[in-house]
Length: 157
View 1 (tube, rainbow, N blue to C red):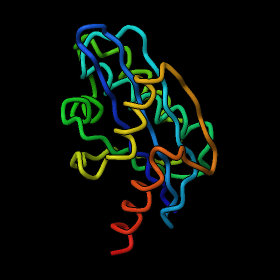
View 2: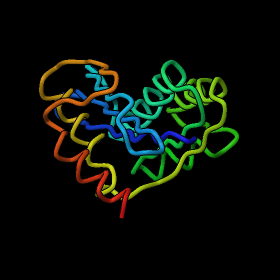
View 3: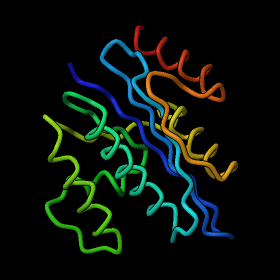
């Protein structure tokens, strides 16, 4: 009964623009939602990753009836989310993310390799490249359909 939410951030240091991407799949590997959001001013890549975690938890709290495994490839943000308190510049984003997580039935956060996070990674780049944000329920953008099929083949094997 657990759903999996993969999140990722994409950051461009010259402009400060970023994008975040998220894909939520049920225990059968079926897409429950995909989302991408453009961030017009971001400090660094770690902030983009923290915003991606927040967005994933916001979406899960709104659309998923059940428990969530949040997956990210950013060790720094995962470590901060697991700590009781964080005193970094990210603390307000992390506190908001943890507050959203309290709305969920249950949740946990885990680190995944970049190769296991390709759908969220591509959605984050898509948001940044196109300066566009969206949430799609029960489907995915054509730009990630092939990646989703590859991911689901890995889920089954």
